[in-house]
Length: 239
Image (cartoon, rainbow, N blue to C red; front, side, top):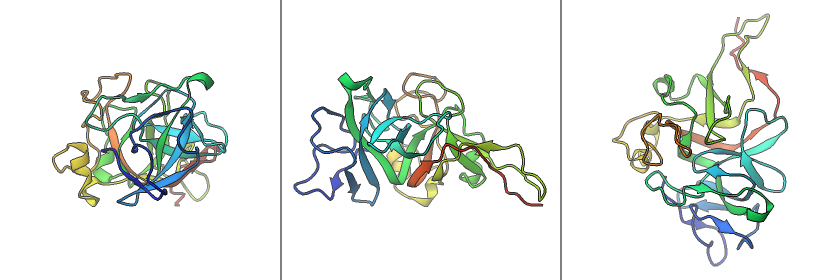
């Protein structure tokens, strides 16, 4: 997804969605903005090394760190925009490592992000259903980069007992078919394919397990996603 020009701020916002800001920040963490296609972004203060297309958990002070499966309390969730686009290696990651080197930037909280990073080299059949039978959850194992998206297939429940399929559900986030939005294929550099694509967001080959990219991206719709930190059954609960 190319960097986006932001609207909704008197005199215009400094930079764009790909810009990484050093302190003192030109705008306050917690500031929101929209682009010309209606996607919405939140300006955050990064607290750890983070990569474009990865998920972050956002606390009440608008501080962002990679979203992990071990998250045990409520957080807002966003997808990192700062530091790169699907077609460039320039400034691909945020280097924030602590209070002395904190950086600021934008995360998407509403709209369609075409290249959310996952921790797998193949889509595992998700493209066949455009995510319709899958739940979005935080990464199931810690790797590099940290904060990748995982999906889990819906389990079959019964009227008596739920299945053993459970997870730390990301609410208000789901995988979408690229064919639903005509512009997304162009942003990804794909040739009109639908569903997830193995087109790298960093010029790498799918599955190379580089520090910036593991190998698969999904297009996801975000409607102010969040987690509660409570593991719940992920099944249809039908008899």
